[in-house]
Length: 459
Ligand code: GLU
Image (cartoon, rainbow, N blue to C red; front, side):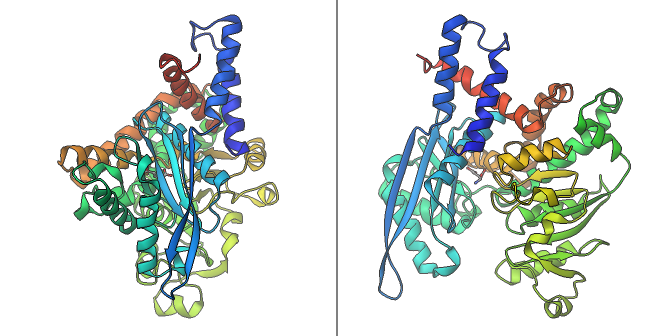
């Protein structure tokens, strides 16, 4: 497990060691041993599957492409997590992401374990036929370890419903006669996907922000006004003020988050900046987000990159450098691109007071500490971006019953689940010195540890 997740898991265990209500039946020397066992189990994946996919390219060449499926922990249910197509994919990265999935599903009471997959390619450099072949090969190479009750992949960066449909179809041909709808989630609706799955992560990210900064506050403002917790104080300071918002990433998560922020009537938001792999677009009066979404949909997901492109599409914005989105003086910064975006070397330039992690692990451990010290509020990945896996769970359930929910029902259940998680964390958090990330980890580790203990895994 990469150091950051491992370090926070260790911190969580340290915090729990002295808590007498945690595993009360394990005492004295046995307690120390049990904590060591927990640290060993949670910091290591159960299984690492690696393959070099043999792919025949359109030009006749054969390439060997590194691919992974990492199964971190299945104490709470079948392994679950996306498959990422990105050039940076490597074993350490996928292992860390798999561990985050274990913690995310535990935190939100989703009955799955944690896993993650990856293929080390830039999908933009491959034709549709080549990508189809990569998807098929991925399932062929890992077919023994995948399945609706074993390990259920889903989309992640660089993959979407098209890839999940291809993979499910391959799984079905390899396992004739077996149930297959639950083998992959994030499929297209016509292939057994769930309404709302594509939007789920972005919707959940925005909902988490809104709930924490507004809904929870409205209901508890009297009690919160007595709290010395920095989050409570910040939330109260923003009670009647509008939020200026910057969003890094305009893909499946960032663009939906931007639309939610733009359309939200509960808060007076101004989405002043969005960015993608090419540019940052800035307008201090607020960007026309629907026009940008429409533009990206018509241009392979890319935002306009020049004044000319902005003019022809009638969008008013200044074109800035790609990285600039991180350093603007806004109230809120949503990180919905890649991991490791805020690091020791650039954390000093961050001005936003509230950061929401739509991507997984976008802030390094070093930067996280620096931000906490400067009083920046961080709503962490495992809390904020679980909408995807939650609706994946709904998709898996719907596939089992072959009964499908309406879109309205999906969002209602998604928000109810995320709200339940926040309600279980926030009262303790607002009276607690631990930052929110650590608080979420303690929750997840408590659940996992108790289950591991009861399953006899600490002997
Ligand atoms: N890839 C998404 C995540 O990181 C979703 C995983 C899933 O739906 O299983 O949470």
